[in-house]
Image (cartoon, rainbow, N blue to C red; front, top):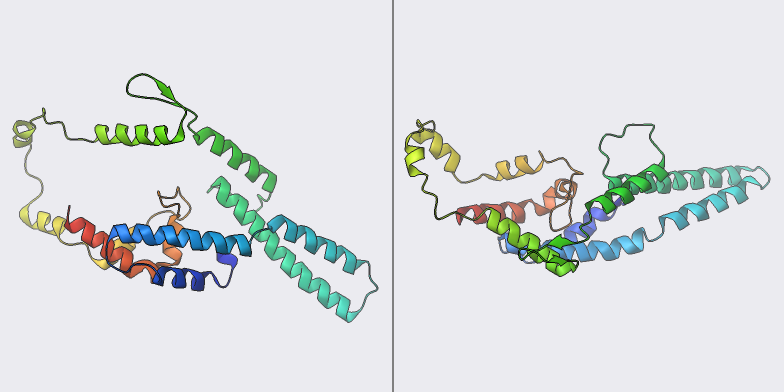
Length: 237
């Protein structure tokens, strides 16, 4: 819905340029956090009351339609109808983004359905409580985050007791030296961009809360810092 605003690009550009431009993913994450705060304040002001705006425009439209017909009245009606159409579209987009239904096609306009779907999905995905490593249960949000983080760290941690070399030696070599050189060469700017634009724009956001669509739409502003941050991170791995 934010993309319906003409000054979004300017807001993103100004907010991003105020951040730290040192090439690192840490600084990118910090800048994104600041960006989220800026956009949150801007959105609160810009879209604070979609429903109230729709209600107000409908009331004004109804009032105009009750007046005697005149050229001025007809022009005002057309103007308000166009503005109302825009706010109704924003309401639909907002509901669609909340529900994250990618299979909907033209004609599915029931916003009540979107709201129900979004609420159902939020309830389904919410973790009410979690069983800890010691067998106890916790409902504390902070403890749940810590437990999830610990679980996946342990899951992907190297097992020092496993010695796979004997098994690896039995596997015929498939990656030749020239192939390995191509696979391990530094990542180019275009590869970072190509990878980003292969992500479906409205799929689940990352930890920073931004959808892929945000990066894709504002890539001209974010490209240099994000690309350098990714390249620097990969060089240290």
